[in-house]
Image 1: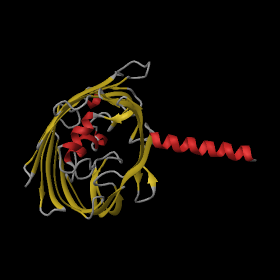
Image 2 (image 1 turned 45 degrees about the horizontal axis):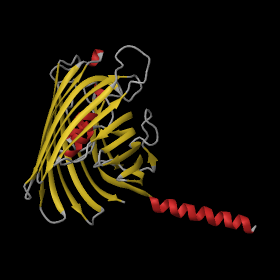
Image 3 (image 1 turned 30 degrees about the horizontal axis):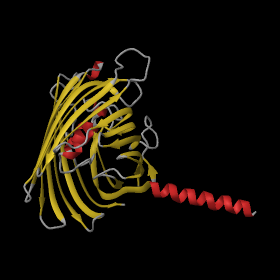
Image 4 (image 1 turned 120 degrees about the vertical axis):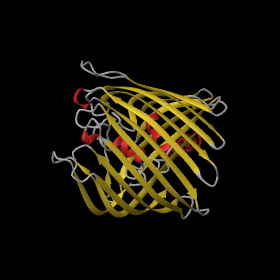
Length: 352
């Protein structure tokens, strides 16, 4: 019995030593809102607009929880990992991407040091980073015209981005900060022996951040792997810029998405302009206008999406805040009887 106690004590000491050498943390973001939500619906075969009054989760940013850790390997080298899962906290459910599994927000392991970072697994794609970094509503899939254009209209067979926010089965390299300049390279093999349009996927980006000025450019080439992750063959590029004048932060984006997948061939050209205006130390007004024009698209060769969003965000503390936002969308020349969809919501957000 005494020997067992000594073994247990030794195991506990080893665990404490390991904890001292490695850092692991639990973190996340929770948000819920109440409002009147109207959006386009194609589930019945005929495009319509549907309205519902509801409590929903993640309209300003999708709720999630994550576990991350790092270990100091010496000589400036660190081992790192991230596991992140989306949450529908209005119902207590998990938002699981069937093609990517439970940890569908992020799941990677890597090394970092003076050379930058090298990560393997599911890692954010630079087009997603460009999208949320240069518009006032960030990664909101409801209020951000950028995110709506990039991700929310695939049901209309529009040339939205043909891949998700994170690239699975990828190798990502990020450079260190060199006088404000950073860059990244990302490669995801097609991982299939099937023919057709299946291609390897790759992305390259560059950014400059110094003082109030921020600039970013991205180019991606993606295949059609038939796995629900890289589901269209595309060659896309995007540009983003912002400048903080203290009294107002201005942002702008431009992108072109070119799809080459049979019936969904087409090009969408998108621009967004936005502003964030601090009105108190804790509150700011956000306004964003975005427009997407669809060209050479078989189902709607001259289709156009316009969206205007207005919101107010108020920080109650460093981690908690409340917001109110409204957005108005108009999707024209795609066969809709009612081309407008308007949404208003008030919500609470908390980071931990």
